[in-house]
Structure formats: structure tokens, C-alpha cells
Amino acid sequence: MQSQVKASVMEAIGETPVVRLSRIFPAANVAAKLEYMNPGGSIKDRMVRHMLRGMPSGTAHVVESSSGNTGAALAMASAVMGLRCDVTVPDTTSSEKVKRIGAYGASVHLCAPDDYHAAAERLAGEHDAHYLDQYCTPLNREAHYRDTGPELWRQLAGEVDVFVCGVGSGGTISGIGRYLKEQNKSVRVIGVEPLNSAYRKLVTDRPADGSFKSAIEGVGKRQPSSSFDPAVVDDVVQVKDEDALDWCRRLAQKEGILAGGSSGCVVAGIAQLLPRLQGLRVATVFPDSGVYYLSKYF
Ligand code: PMP
Image (cartoon, rainbow, N blue to C red; front, side, top):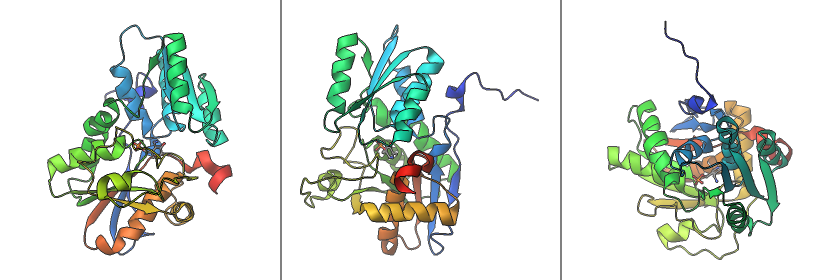
């Protein structure tokens, strides 16, 4: 018998289960990877682990701007690695997510939604700290290309025709999508975002009116991030916040999957796409848990 004890929670990241959504989509073939089962509670554990492997040696202080999950993942990793950690978050972030970052011993800075990236940059400059910058670093999508993509492909035994994914920074869809297409070039990759977010215009030339505003945390951007690779994504669909939240509740009540609003968003996108998905094998990822939004969505 071999010991299965991990050296730290960092080694417990990944190998999250993939579950068929046969109760909400009985006539379709849709499988979701439950990324909220990572130790830090979201898919961002993988990206942070990869970004920290690439940080300059001797780094003792890290800074990141985050809608919450990257901050929690970084705060968790910093606790394990003995790093000082500062996280800037938009002041619209759910209080559970803000408290979760602080619970790991990190400092949380609430900022205006249009200033939290710049605030992180300023903070890193003032303290000579390492700014991870998930919205610009190529390490974001590389983490999903090297880690999440191969794991999903293996768990699906290659049985996938369409990958549908929520888009925030774009790292997840770009990294997983590129890996899946390299394994089978006929795989289609479709992004889902809230109404008036910026990515659909990048991929399809359908106009955005610049009025983006959504209560769904983690997905959608007024300005596209360079972590998004338009060459990988074949189409982007947009969904209403109320539909995302409606599907979020249905996921909990029919599948027993208590996932966050961005998971509801991607399921709303799949529901919208259903006529195009007949007979196809669909895969998606659920980035985080509904536990962080109990007071906001449920
Ligand atoms: N869902 C949630 C809850 C998130 O925190 C994020 C990250 N912003 C995403 C979806 C989108 O992932 P990505 O940034 O890789 O596009």
C-alpha cells in the first residue's frame, strides 16, 4: 500500500469530477467539470499554482486584482508558501468571497470596479511586490492548456464535439479550447458571456453597445483581456443575468450542483444553443461554488 497523504493543499489541486447533466438536459449530452471541488474552492487554484511556479525567485510579497476566486487561490497558496499577499477586489464582490480571502490571512482592498486593476499595480509598485496580473500574463491560459485541458480530455476519453465555456479573463476558454482542438481539430469552442460584454464582438463582429453591466461575478468584460485568444474561439453567445441565475437555481434543485453564477451563465448559454447541439457531445466547466453567493443569488 502506498501513502496517499499530500504534502500540502497545493498538491490536492485538480482531478475534479466530470458529471453528466442529464436531469436538466435529458435530451442532450452535456458534461460539466466541477472545478469548485478544488481546495481553494475554484478553477483559479490551477492558474495561481502555475503562475507562482513562474514567479521570480526570492519573491516574498505577491499582489493580484481579482473578482474574488483568484484572490482566494492566491491567499491560500501564500499561506502555504509563507508569502505576504495583497488582493484588490471590486467593491461589488460578494461579502462571502471577500471574507474568504481575508480568512487565509491575506489583506483585501475594496476598490471601485473600474480601478481595481490599477490599484493592484500601484500597490505592487509601492511595495516592490510581484504583481501576477491574470488579465495580461500568458501563464493564465497556459495553466489551462497544460493542466485543465489535458485532464478534461482524459476524463471525457476524447468524447467531445463542443466545448462551451464562460469568459472572464478568457484564460480558461483559450487554454482548454486550444488543447482540445489540438487533440481533435473538429472540436468547436463556444464562449458564453453576459449581455453587452466585449468578447462576442471580437469573434463575430456583432456589435456591442458598450453598456456592459452584470451581476454575474467572474464573467464578462467591458474591455477584452489579452488572455482571450480569438483564434481558438468559434463563437460567443450572450445571456441575460436573470436567465443565468434561473439556471443556477435549477442546477442546485435538479442536479444537486450548487454552483456559482458563472456556471448558471454557461448553462443558460447551452440552453440557448440546444437546437445547434443536437447529437453532439458537449463539455463545460463550472468554475466555482454557489456557497459564495448564498446571500446574493439564492
Ligand atoms: N467564473 C468565475 C466564478 C470566475 O471567477 C472566473 C474568473 N474571472 C471565470 C468564471 C472566468 O474564467 P476566465 O477568467 O478564465 O475567463
